[in-house]
Image: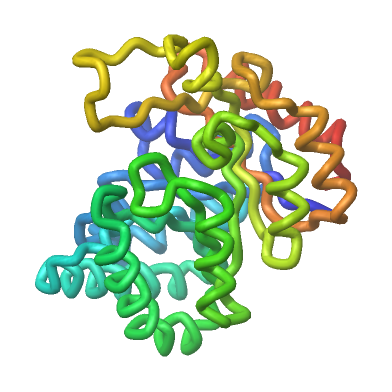
Length: 288
């Protein structure tokens, strides 16, 4: 059985985090994954959530019947700048406190860092994991890692090797469908990536994207050519080139029973329609 969660990112600009949980219930979801927002935990900033805020989220859960299944914080814990890295570890400790208050036992995150300094960032990330391990273990919270465009790790193979290298059972892997072509350098071999990570695969992010390397790389035009940037989308299923039949069949083949998180971004005017369609598709593919 999978848990189908909504990332309510497209609602944060029009309602509170608590109300976005209620909105998820109105759309038919049983779970949410709370991604970065200014009320709770924002990118690389000290989390602003407090006890009163957490009580508001608990009330929203009770009102709606929707459970906060996971959090998806992003902190620059791979910074080679030791002072900055220390601040980010402090931010992580507060996130874990808030997650515990909310009774969230699973967190998804990114490697962060800079792809131009991968060796230095790797050293910083492992040092941060060593420092935070007692906190994760004290709270009994699992961590699932994903590679992300413009992180110091951008490809599936390196990300999974790094997860395994920690040699910690509470650190798992998250496969991000909208990053399919970044993860595979344009190949899109989803069967291999999903199968190879099966022992530690605990979450899948669900949204679509186009292959940025197709057609001589001109599917996207970035000026000036060769600028140090990454482009990807989080579109609804079908508005892109992710091979969904192969994704879903591969997940069924490995008996995936983790979290499927719907994370469509940037289509606020059609948010309800797109999120409902995604939920219906996932329910048709998997028993919830």
